Image (cartoon, rainbow, N blue to C red; front, side, top):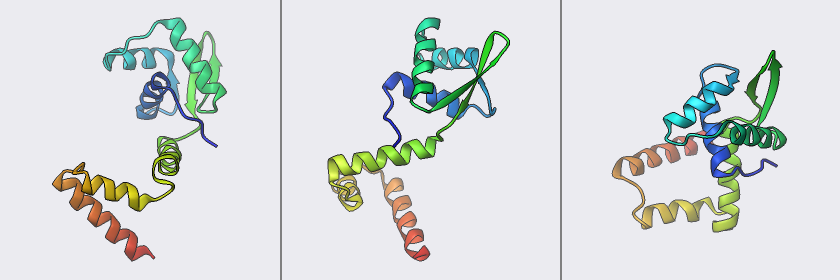
Length: 127
């Protein structure tokens, strides 16, 4: 089971997931946090990265005095696990309940509504 991330851990993972390189270096993460308006102290980031490794999201390879971080769980895998958790917790596992709420609660733009209709049709064709 994929664990849930804290807000700070998720910010770090978004930076790592968004890195086009396979390995992510510490300075890249520091710069990414600063660019997002969330600067972080070096020691705090070290603790957060350690937690992400303990939770199984990252692995680290020591190269000299620096660590190279690699993702072990993709962004899509995390999103899928969290969506399932949310559906089970809030909608008792009913995707229909979620979609109904999005539509009836006027939470979708017209464009999102049309895109969702197209996705549903594509899914229907696959069956």
